[in-house]
Length: 159
Image 1: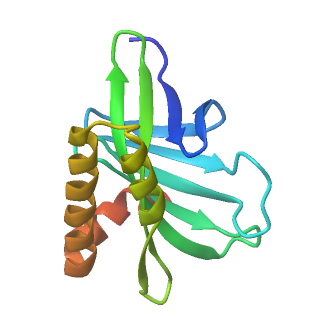
Image 2: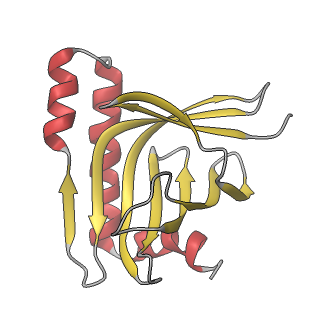
Image 3: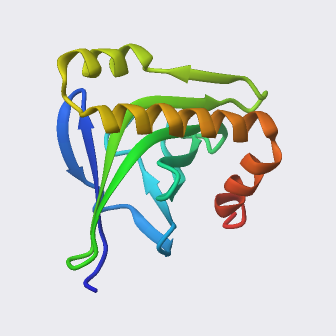
């Protein structure tokens, strides 16, 4: 297999971006772990680590401020599309996101964008159902605590 190439596919706005500057720390058939800096400079966040759980439809990111403080754990609901022949991994952002703040507060965001994409028929029914099921499974892991802690270890063990 050629070198892995990672892409983020968004629907709002409609774009596909190669994550060419992300450093791939480890990769297996089920999990890819990366280290990254923000694509565009921001005042609130600067860098982080991500673990793509390919079979769960979740990208878990530990996000840091420019000062190096934890801002939150950011969970994207994704649909990975993998072409093993050329090493291309396209992570479709299915719009639903879950944020976990350092104080433990959990916030589900962008359901309005998810509804807009559903209303416009941008994705098919299978993608909508997968997004909802992945979100439900993720929230159960977060509320359970132990399962979510196991997911976080893929990143925490690097630091």
